[in-house]
Image (tube, rainbow, N blue to C red; front, side, top):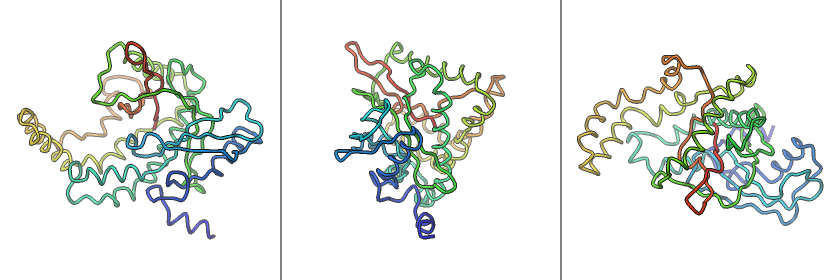
Amino acid sequence: MYESSIAMELNLHTAGSGLFETHISWEDIEQRIQSERKLKVSFGPKKNAHQIGDGNGFMSRIGVIDADFQGEVDGLPSKFVVKMVCVLAGMEIAESVKDRHFDENADIQEIFDGFDVNVRNLHNREVNVYRVFSRFDNSISKMPQVYFAQGFEEENVLKGFIGMEWVENLELRHIFHNVTPKELSDALRALAYLEAKSLELSDEEKRKVASNPVPIIYPPMMHPSAVSKMFHDMYTASEELRPSGEVLEKMAKELPLLEMTSTMNEELGMKDVFIHGDLWSANLMWNKTENGVQLSRIIDYQ
């Protein structure tokens, strides 16, 4: 009864007492490894965790774990990454850009109060995606290897996480960095490969990965007034953009037609296929080479 009442007071956008202000503890991760991988293993006294990727994500904290495992490991590496669902970063970023990107009357707390259910669904879908597509060639798909994962359930609304491989010497190419067409070709090949392989999925597998959260999640952030303000701020900051910015500002009510993300392919006579859905620069991981960069991994399949 005590645990139930506490769970009702807490949510994914309040700070917890676990790792990196989440509600996830060392014990939660250890128990999941033991349960899912059927191992008699525990973290050792020299275990360590440090956070990476701060400022690059909105719905999670990423920790690199040095496990110092004691007991049987059966191929499980001692160093890996745990992605922990936590919306604190999203709230912090939203508050910092509220004046620029939200309506002046927007209540960030109210927006995120209704966000938790959607975030849980996104996490569970990502877990399903990694499990369903694990039977395909990840040297082409560029999906990271996943070792264990815990989804949200009715009795678990606070602790969702994914344990996956740690890859050395990765770097991001942000939107202000250049990537050549040749370097980008592996990303296009990976996307095409996943889309093609999704046609081979069983009906049950398709059900597990099927989702389009865009029309549900983005309306609070893509209100016409916010879109209009974004274009207005853009051309007032740069006179060169004023002619096109003024035209787009007048079209603000017509632009956020988010339902088209579910209907356009059918209107064009195309089959439903699996797509990434959040393919921005921070979700592409690169290795530095002598001549530039080479794609290593594509992450975040909500």
